[in-house]
Image (cartoon, rainbow, N blue to C red; front, side, top):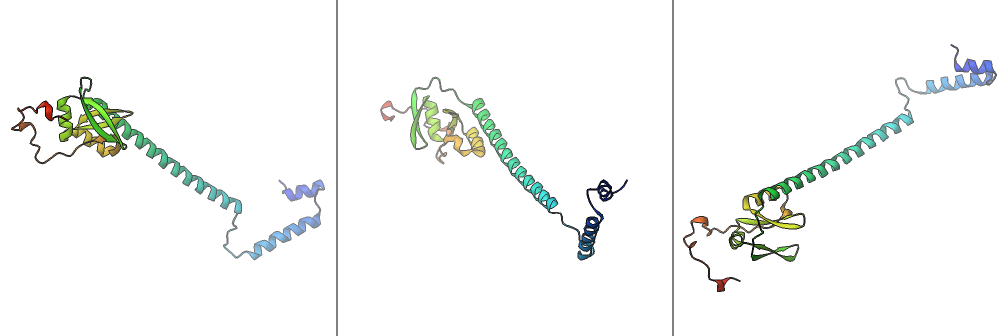
Length: 178
């Protein structure tokens, strides 16, 4: 098959003089390049840079998506821990007040729950827009995942002897409650 140059000459679109000039110019360019030098194609270079930039953007986007997925997974774990371990507050009569976001909040709990909340055996946690009471161990597991979900957890005192308290049988007089 004849070359494009030959086809153009036969069709009369180019003349012999222009064809010789183009051949000489190509030969001069080849001679000016040092041996072993590779002709750098600018479009290939730009395309390579564009691919690298796109790959970097994709990596960043994937990292952000992974962080979001991890965050959602942690929130789901917290929600499951709270929903499976929350204590029933339906028959609470004693108000328990705590501070959340610089505001004093109040929930109603039983007398024993109020005592255990004060001793650090129970904790108040936030689930969506409501407050729930869970055991201390569950609250610590929640704190490992997200500390902001635990609203009120008091530290246990060294003098808190627990269930074998020698004064456990003595009731606190009503006039001492505040």
